[in-house]
Image (cartoon, rainbow over all chains, first blue to last red; front, side, top):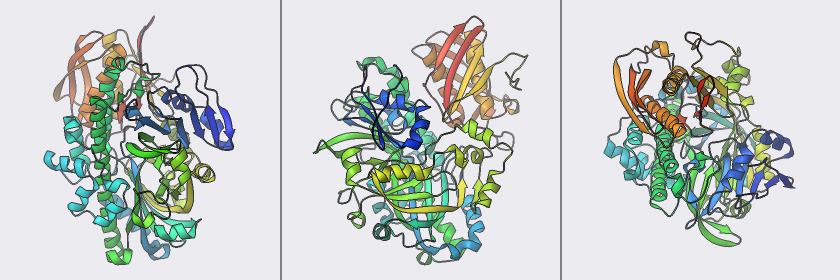
Length: 481
Length: 148
């Protein structure tokens, strides 16, 4: 394919006009400041590549945190027709249902300031993290299959948290259609050892405080009351289980690539028709991984609650750690979305993107029905996060989707080089963030300058109306894998 | 090019190149067999210091592919699973059969022991992205990108 040409549509949108085999145009949400950086990697080409896939509806989208990924770009969003369209593991990503949850507390920073070091240390020693980390729990195959079918509900039924948590989780923490018979023995084997572990790389558990509230009314509904309030953010996914599911199905689909009757611009986009045996099987396995991830985050949250209670010697009531919401960042879902004004069931792929449903949407818990879905956007290590709310604009324009994070700009190798000779832990401490990491290299790979400026990313989705800023949070303590 | 400790007998087995989110591997060999066994060496020398791995166990590996490139990815996926799924660290790989669609051989190594081995880099997946296997005037060259 020839070089990618981008036409600016308005202040925040660039279009890749359909050329050659592209079935629809590509649309990139960005800004004057960020678009230059975007042009320098292959991600615009990946936006164009997605537009080749059969059954794609309207356009191949990219959110402002877009960067290079396998197959789809990270930050890529696309919807497919259920009859003529495809489902692609490369449109979901390896870490299926990598996602983030945020818990509010009734604590103020001043109340934990003196115990912050103990809190971070205790979280670090009580929550298994790092390369290939194994949990304290060893699941039997039968029990693991229950996790895969029931998701976060399994965790709650087994004493990790309460039914209220499920209400505040996307899809209630359980994706329908999960079938463990579609999962390989290898995935099951990997999954057995890692439930209830944080993992490595960009995954984290962070103590943050509310820094700024943009929309008081919505913030109050979300339980974000005032500056200085302590919240906890967990970013993790389906661990080795999800990787193995993706790897297994990718290999199968690559093998069958020639039978599909159309050519792919990139093997990593290997896919199957949604309405085919292979497509259905991938969906059922992916749903298992999504459920695994929800059970995982539910357990991590439960342990975070316990650590807070023990370390601060306060009752659960005094701490009031309540799940605000949990969202997926890597997923394909069958959703009813307005397409050209008409509601239609489609398969939405969000790869490094967040669902952002508007006020009144039936998928929202009653408490958020008037204000829209909470959207959690974690920044880079130690920077903090944003809480946004879903909008009608996102529903009608981006298949109910918005950005998911800061987005990488520097490769891990380059970040390591850039941080050579520096103590990242000390730099963080100088910024009043206590960081503990399991891996020697993780902190260096995850330095703040390896990521896009989260403020710039969030401004784009806020200013285009894809979601509304509610609050900004600042990190004070962080555990990394 | 900087001489790295992984070069044995001053012969380059592999080289790492930078890739946006991940880790790129360029692998060399005088013939196809050497290319594949060097690829296995590269993968495990990145995961840990391959010198720290002893030989205590063998694992039989037999895989298929639709062509050399597919075969290279499938081979690396398979031996990566030995570690990610079974905790087995590979020190050496001996090939008993190799054609453009099949590879059979023995992985020799031992199980991960946290007191003995240090994991330097977690390789999470071997991808099909920009995979390449080529015969050059100097020998064989392969390229693969790993998710780390």
